[in-house]
Image 1 (cartoon, helix red, strand yellow):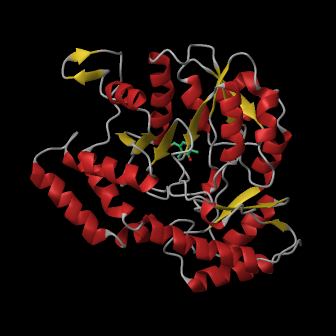
Image 2: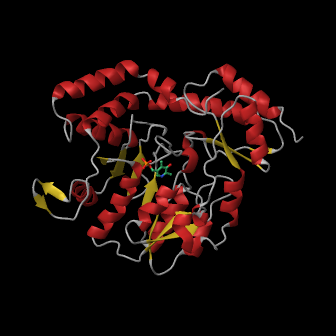
Image 3: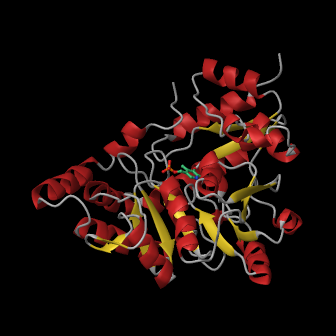
Length: 369
Ligand SMILES: *Cc1c(COP(=O)(O)O)cnc(C)c1O
């Protein structure tokens, strides 16, 4: 079986460095908010090209905390609306609901699967305070258009970068520095993955940074003095040290995945399959290689029988989830088409050339029976 994502193999590549990092943390006798976190925050901020990186417990918390911080700063209030793509992973939307703001779903561009700037203005009301673009599957959104709209209407832009570590535009501006703030996830399967849960926020706004640092630590900047009713969402020393070890090779891994993606794009010739549209080479870091096919279930079964594991990202659109009952009767046709047809092929830094060849051959041999 060709695995969809072999985390065991991926982390074996780093074993020596990870063990070294692990030992360093054990032997330091200091496990929360120490020099490993400081170093990782410094390195990741530098990597993204942004002033501050703030480590947090996971990617969902990163987004929740950004919105919460803007509430504490008096920028957002309960009932305000945030525009978010209708076809994202549910966490982008939960972060808005969790803060008692209202997520407004916006249909994507059917070619890139990212939020369609043309739809954004149509969805705005007097309560709109922010846009939350998600660089889905690893490809940058049309940030130029999104930032233009945000400037015109004085909206905040909060990027969801959980799938897009290192994606950059033609001027080499990276995901995480286009908007006012960005949330990253280092869930084990993400492009930069911890050995457990981890996340980060990037921003160049000093005031926001200070508010976030308090909120993630019980609302406290000075020990035992609580300015806000905060939470505990710290990134611990161990995960920070492990992430630091992996960050050094992130760009090499991305480049390796780009080459596989390029083989798929060139060599998959089956007319039943819609391949992903790439805006520009470096704008995509291939968190996922997502194709579309009308008879998905049959195709996925065929691949499984052929020894190829695939995954659906994602099977149920947010507006059809039980958690959002109030939206169940709404219609987002593009989002629904996407959820009905998408399938993610194996794509990882440990996939061999032979495995890629096998996958391509099997796909090209597929026909309706
Ligand atoms: C993974 C993911 C998140 C949430 O990150 P966690 O670290 O799992 O909490 C948020 N948004 C998107 C688009 C994601 O893919």
